Length: 171
Image (cartoon, rainbow, N blue to C red; front, side, top):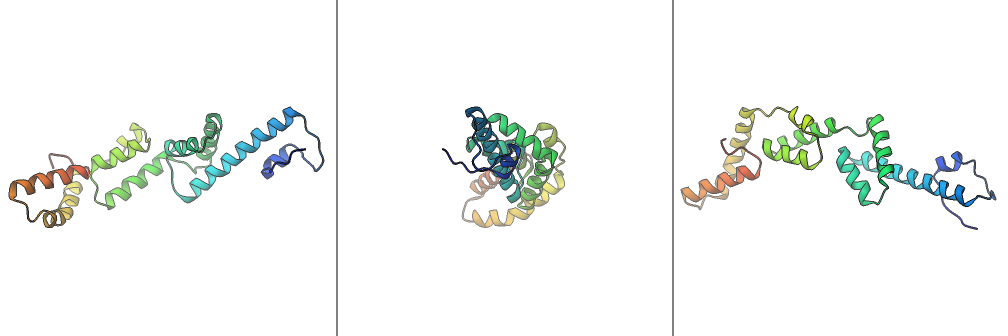
């Protein structure tokens, strides 16, 4: 006799009751369905806490050793329920990093790192004037940071700082 804990959906799918004897095949099927239910519950707990891209959720589930076939099914369910949406995720990323005064290149790299498609990334427009305005907001703090440097070194430091934050070298 073996005792296993089951998700309610698994319990009802197999019409289980106390004392029911199972074949080895039935037990394997129950364990497989229970593992899937556990993985689905895990995915729901992730998306309940924050927004994920399809790729980042997939990576998170892979790290938990969820089977690839289960991952695909789970992602499909979450997409159908609109709990997973790469466009919405990308919009959030762009808004967050623009508010933190990051430049276009940094934001695009962040989106690529999160597995966002080129099609979605190219749908965003980064206004050059707004990029310059963000640079002007950052400039005073950078000037204070490098105040003791000579003019040439200060220029190099400013250039590197703006590149690090994702601004174009021409800006």
